[in-house]
Length: 343
Image (cartoon, rainbow, N blue to C red; front, side, top):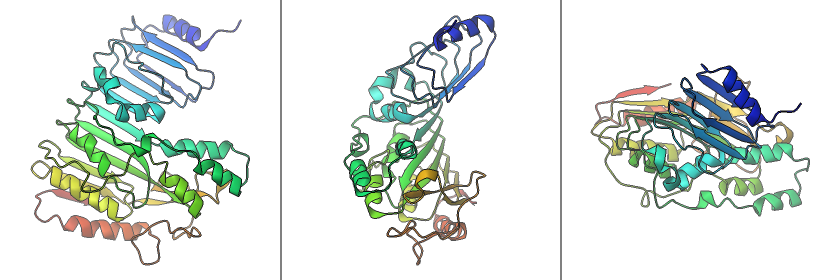
């Protein structure tokens, strides 16, 4: 007898009434899920990479931490009064940033928030699944696809009045402005710790570079357009994936000015390298990202017509150069009485 995932989950909870933690990851069979009281001990839930999920309902009074990385599925959180830690990714994460009013019923109570703004990763997955070769037709097909969310600066901001820690993991192109992300700091008046991890896409040909520029997961704003405000509670800033480009320096300096009265520590992590992340299409792109235990490709990689990293004379950057550049940047903060760490 075949049981649907929802029915199987119901039987599972009936048999395990004391369960506290549940993770569902990479399930193609999962389409509809409900987590509804009475679940008196259930506190931690993760649902990640379930690409066929169609509906999700979460109404658990004692739930404290939730991770959802996947499709846009409406609003799954109905009754979660104790939810304080949230991790979001995929299209639902975009909705949280660009449609904040839909999430205001629970965003105001969060104390820790992790946003994985990796819109471009969906492009990677599509390329990996494609059997086409890199032809003019292939490029034209992708160039005709527009990313609407990445072109619009939202009028409203998420309501994060209780947030103490914010972590952003983003995919970007080297040199692209990061200043839009300061708007999330502005939306979090109680914020004390801010961490950003950057994974850079390095396209290997000009047509694909144009595509990447139009598929970034957040809009690009200038220094004139960026929010100007003061933050009185931000104490720690950490950037992971620093490569030494001007947009990173602009972002760090901007946050230091915003939190000048409260800032205590600035951490810059430069331990990054080049990786091949799309094995079926190695000629299209590589990634410059924090080391993750994988074997990187050769430092100083050349990428045809597009120079991957901008600050150095030869158009490339290695971790030593980034560290040297970071130390120079952070030494310029002489007027701030802060702890400065470069890794």
